[in-house]
Amino acid sequence: MCPRPYNLGRRRLAADKTRLKILAAARNLLASRAGMSGFSVDAVAQRAGVARMTVYYQFGSRIGLLEALFDYLALRGGIDQIASAFRQPDPLAALDAFIDVLARFWGSQRLVFRRIHGLAALDPDFQNVVQSRQERRRHGLQTILLRLLSERSQPASPSVENTVALLYALTSFETFDNLAGPSRQLPDVAPVVQKLARAVLEIDLHQALGQCDRIPADKTGTGAKTR
Image (cartoon, rainbow, N blue to C red):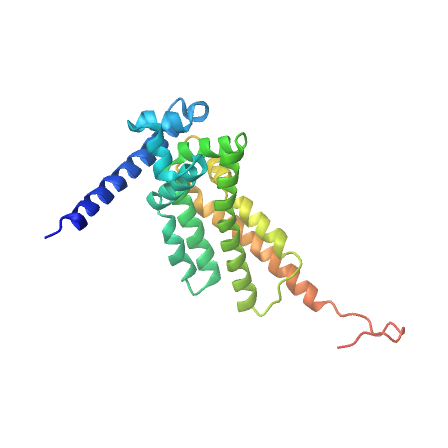
């Protein structure tokens, strides 16, 4: 019997373990005192107890390492539960569930996310990776808003973009972190964010309804309104 498939399986398992070891080291480095100033491929490799080239072999580049780290944090933080939020039949219930998932996700590695967002302001690599992930959140919020407008038979108004931007700001890590402050956990403030988000949506719905009620003047020049 050829042992090759077995050997390949063992090598793949070893590679997977090495990959997870490096990602855990990257997360722990960001959570350490050296976090923001000491994050580099060399520092991650040293903390993981592997060669620098092993990191490049596993992830291809610093960007590849950062992208994998974000996916690793997302998986451990339960961000995959977002899918169940979108399965909610009521758009407002979907929004509440969406915010609950985000609160638990942001809260799962609060210090790490705080430092990642701090680094994003200084490091273009971090900024690009963070921004690409955050756009998924923006798209999710837009989907929920359009579902709500459709359910209420209201057309998408010009204010939709602004409303999505407000919801995007409300559901950011920085908002949760600031609302929680030093004494509360991030999931504890989810009801506050949900209440604010619903208020924003109601404003947009009223604006959309108001635009639908505007009746243009006819083209005869008489000033008469048409119904």
